[in-house]
Image 1 (tube, rainbow, N blue to C red):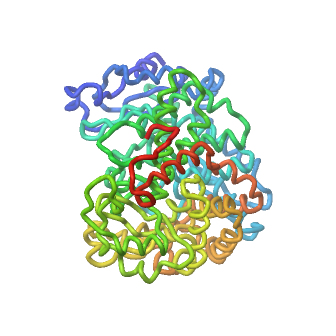
Image 2 (cartoon, helix red, strand yellow):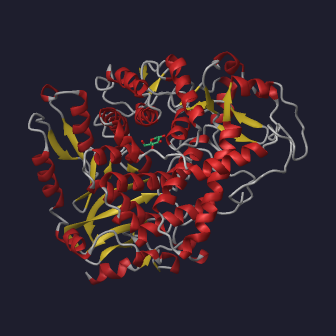
Image 3 (cartoon, rainbow, N blue to C red):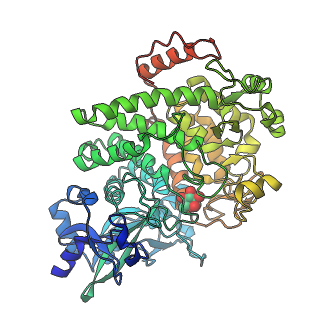
Length: 606
Ligand code: GLC
């Protein structure tokens, strides 16, 4: 054991010293569990070992389990899979005579006997449980897809942070809190990982896109194994995309955990508070930006491939806003946090003003843009971003309804991305980034454009698809993102849960109920695909995984919330009256309404 404990203190520290880069061609750190607790270990066979730099301080500070748990994790090393199988088997519904077996990835695969299943919801629960991933005998997440027929796994055998959110919510609403608690604490440990990509280290607050549990032979002892958590921060992801949304979702889930379980001890822990602050610092760091929106690269969220959403995509802004509000609720008041709180409050006001004012379009606003004057210099410009009216796409002129409206996908100098993105719009409702009227108008649009946005399977990820030359240039001729497929106008059942939270918040649950009914017509028969193709979502996606966990969990959460709408509160951010005041001061000072810089009587410094 001495050798192992020594290894814990050593890490392939490419980020610490550039002179070591040559020794470290492949970044491969692991988090391991031993009787000394949780720590880092360099990958077996790697010749790049270096004492941890001071950047790993949180190593000693962050510890997810107490001493008792640590010893348990040691003693369960080889027998854990059996014992967990036993536990799961015991808990299973006797009507379900499926066979549970490990699939080699720490997850369980399930062979279901359909005859014994009562309903789609029961089946979904069975599949959701079968997707659980264990680390040292503790459930820590759910595998992205559990498709036995698929030979090319890629990284679908990993626990994705964003994919786990609906799973986590489903478990919370079922009163099964452990898996969510473990997920929160383990991913927190991964946050402070030494991460590099070609000699560059991203910010320390970055959360991984995904992680994998590997069970490997214990060094120097062939008869024993150890579990290893192996994260991917984007350095191995297709396109090397940074998962900006992971940390934001982590904060949102942390708040939901506290609200649902009543256990505030997790969010109050010093390491968790540090984790929240690290994420916030990364998001609130000064840069070259003129806008309060978060500037990100393409593919930094659910759409994790090139789709022309670099810049200030709506999805990230809505999650950012929600995470800021959630963090504000959870941060403990202490002197050290005062500056952070001020920065956070200022950003909240500026962000909500910016998105509500400049991302919003409806008939009236579209007509205003249609008549925009351009090349306006000065503080009094109406067309601040110099949008040329010719940018209004012909499809939108036809598509825009008299009643309803939505937030556009992105806003940059001289560029409005007029595509409709579901997640960004729905989370704008949930987080109260959209005003009450705007929120209703977005739902009005869903109703008016049901065939386009719901069709045969909820929900369109974005509308419309990029086609022809636009597809070639914007996606880089991506064969996975062909028109009306995958991220490019495909339909994703997982989005059902976000639609449900949004429609419950606005007291219009019937919208989600109808969408759930549409999904129920085929989602189980189709084996819970990841996404659907074609304009009306009639085909299972060309390269869609089957038994995709977040399709399953998204459906489960929608059903749980419709049965108990009050529970949606754990996800909703209620509009803050101070923000409303500050916002109305800004509105009255806006040149579109009043061409003057005077009169800003704000309570926050913008
Ligand atoms: C795809 C999706 C991404 C998801 C991952 C795992 O890459 O675009 O959002 O997290 O699959 O399901």
